[in-house]
Amino acid sequence: MFDLQTPFLKPLWRRVAITVVTLLWALVEIAGGNVGWAVLFGAAGLWCGYQFFVVWDPETVDARAAAQRPSRREDGED
Image (tube, rainbow, N blue to C red):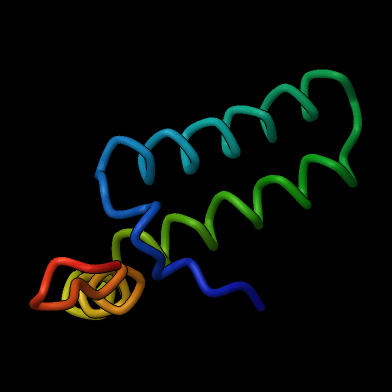
C-alpha cells in the first residue's frame, strides 16, 4: 500500500511516535463510540508497528538515503 522504508522514518522516535499516536487515536475513537474509525486507526497502527519493527530494513533505508543525496563533483562545482 504505502512504502514506509524511507530515510525520513529512520529515527526510532519517529516510528514509535507514529505507531503510538495511531493506536492511541483508535482508543479515543472507541471511547467516543465510533467503532468504524477505531477499527481503521487500530488497523493502521498495527500495520505501522509491523512495518516499523518487524520488517524494517536499515540497509534499504540507508541505500535510499544515499541515492537521494546530491552528488558532488570533484572540481567543487555543483
